[in-house]
Amino acid sequence: GKMLFSSDAFGLPELYFLGVHLFRQGLDDVLTSLVERGEMGPSDAHRIAALIGADNARRVYGLTA
Image (cartoon, rainbow, N blue to C red; front, side, top):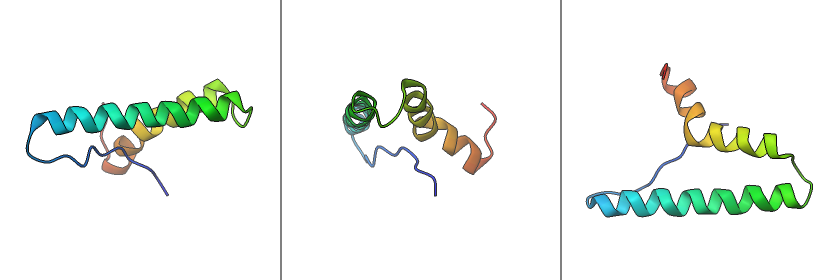
């Protein structure tokens, strides 16, 4: 399976901002913890963040940029 980012916000623009902010903070916390515990390397963490944040959506929806 693939994991994609979604803000799950609707209506007010502030909800999109808050959704993105909390998602990025949570993802950073999880990936930093995994790197610190030696369960993955920094390059793996960067790759996972890129995949979740944009690259999976590009592949799923056939986007080029």
